[in-house]
Length: 541
Image 1 (tube, rainbow, N blue to C red):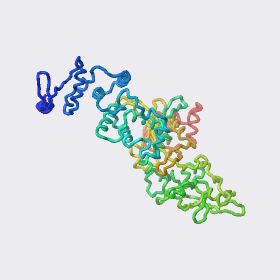
Image 2 (cartoon, helix red, strand yellow):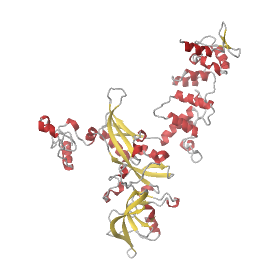
Image 3 (spheres, one colour):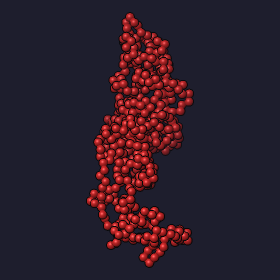
């Protein structure tokens, strides 16, 4: 022991008087220290309880020895202690000495908690509308759950129990019991947490996935995320995100793919108009009396706009006809009447032969919506091979990840917005992508709560881009990759080993080769599926 330690110990014992039998404290009471269990343990324990009223002696107490005294718990308490051998001796000692621990942390406590009351209707339902921290009971409950959920700072049960005890001793209001917290966490996970689904691939491999239908729905109810979500493609001079690119807002409109883009809009800035939903492919009326057949929505000059073609109404035939096939753009706030409003004013919604066939009287998705807003989210879905070990030994896994492309680019660079979908040692990326497609497949509408609109909505998720490195792209495209003679999936560069080792063949590897065609790719895949020989040997493309 160095001089500093000796000096510190001398300072700690400065108020103690040494006798032949031990020490006398500043209050003239004998201080007893135990080095293990013995015949006088119960006497010592009773004396120690009195001495603990003076906090100055706490540094000198070996709680691990106190915890080893004769067991005086009842059967239920003993079972609770035995069930978790990691309970620190300090907690056990405090409990045995009757210190003021939260009641719900004590083994054997049978006081009803949230987990033993009625189901969700009585646990969470009674709090909604009367509690600003719903679905949590109090702000303190929320903050403790947040503390317990930090992914990079994991707390054990023992840590958390001590934190709750310290909070209670410091007078923190509404400190929950440990069991109460755990029961509420279990209930919330069941009711509003991420749902993991089970899938079996065509090859018989099992995959468990956190689908976009579960992870993306939380973005709608999170005000910190919802505030950054863009719901419509935007007209941009400088492309800064996916929704400003040509793919999201093509220059040439393909009318066969209109439903791949946002379907509807409403003027939520005017509460009286919030239920007046305008859908694409329907006829609407503008402020100036013009009738439009809507094509699509976009953001222009920070305002929602709509593209459409102008129609004319013939009162004699009671039909709408095409007035001008040219696409015109109007501000969405100029729209005053949808097809239901027109019907209410006596208009008959019929189209003559000049109106395109994709026009509808009522969009088919209205029946699914049942008055709820409908939105479209775009997803980036990608796969990569990773190691499942933290050590240097490689343990190959194939992972699938997701990102919500309706968020701006700077948000997508943050780790929080990269969503894990699935992983497998056996299922390939293509098999896991099939599981993803089952979750967000065609015409799959997902219910969510929109915290901005403060109402239930429906949304669909559409894969928009599939980024990957070259080996992963080759696998996704059913290409053999670098193992084949022709190891480029985009062109016919390569050849036999002899050719690639020749002077001309080696030089050709660094030049652009002849591009493949879609027909050649389809033909090669069909030949492989029918056990035939592909046109180019040793390749899958």
